[in-house]
Image (tube, rainbow, N blue to C red; front, side, top):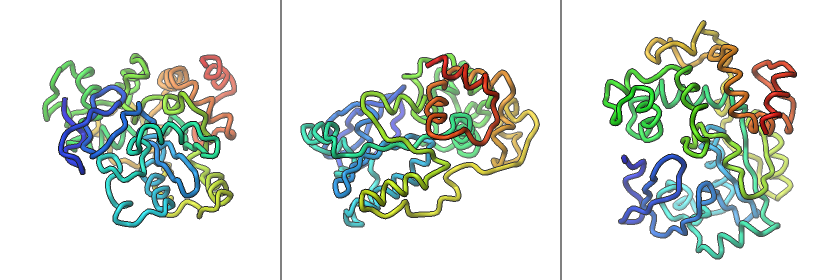
Length: 297
């Protein structure tokens, strides 16, 4: 299986726990905590554990959290997943990492996103805009293989890619634990411990929490963290990637009633988590749709 990472500060590959794949990382030290624990960002100075959920502003937020660590720039500029910086829970001695996990003085936080919007964002990035990138193929290979019926997809398969409808139809037939972290249910990231949750589209609540902990609010340009597009494309969910005119397509364009119901059922717990934080925003759903989502929990 193709490795996502090919280098780091170690010389030999370490197999890290990762949903749906074998992930080889090249760190000097690794404590073999299970995913997603090993990827959590440790901020000892302000006693926060940040759990980065893929396609929930995780790249932006990881950078912002690392900036609050107080570590020198020579450390914070290193790729966290391949260098032993001490900023990931997996970098620490196992006893220390487990002590932090069970320390009530550490605030464990995570940011979640409307699952309808999250799936569209993942689809556009991985299967449309950057579908030929080698790194992206690590994430999309299993999906492309299953839908195209080729054990080893070739260049033409990745270029042809899949429609959004094919993407959703594949996802909802798979065990959640086998899906890539970019589209597995967000609830899987939250198993085993308690987190204070924040919505991606309302980061002001996270800012207030950081300030209460004696830190600065999230720094950086937030304009591209969430999709704020209103361009509607008829039947976008059925179109092949090379027939989509651009990526600035409204989330609603990708869902017909059938796809909505499939996502509501499969990602019901994610929808419930969003619902408990604040009234839903973005797509409009009837009250009975939310009742169906909660009924699957």
